Image (cartoon, rainbow, N blue to C red; front, side, top):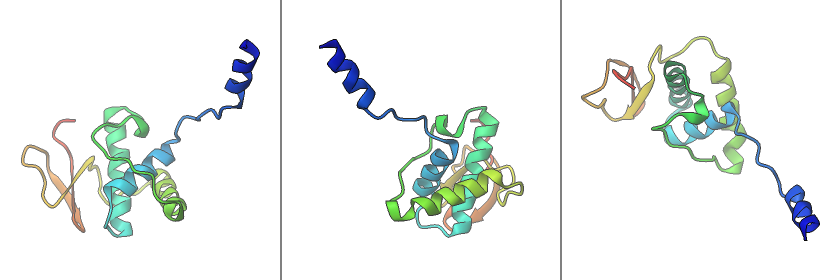
Length: 125
C-alpha cells in the first residue's frame, strides 16, 4: 500500500511557484480590462512600483485582482509583463496605485490619467 501511495505522489504534477512575470501578467489582464496597451502597461508599472514600495514580491501583493488570460491572449500579456519588468522609464512615474474613474478621496496625489484609469501615489499602503 505504501508503495502505491508513493508511486501516485511521484506521478502527480508538482506546481511550480508562480513567476513574477506570470503574476504580473495576470494582474495586468485583470486590472486593465478595456484599456489600451498604454493603459495596460501603466497598470503593470504601477504594480511594480507598489511591490518595490511595500517590499513584497508581485505575487504576494494584496488589493489587486488576478485573472488568467485566455489561452489566445496569454502570450500577449506575458510579453507585456516581461517588457514592464525590463523597462527603465515609467509612464506613470512613481505611481503605485490606480482606480477607475476617479481617485479615492483618502489617497495621495494623482500622477496621470490614462483611459479610464487614474494613477496616483497612495498616501499610505
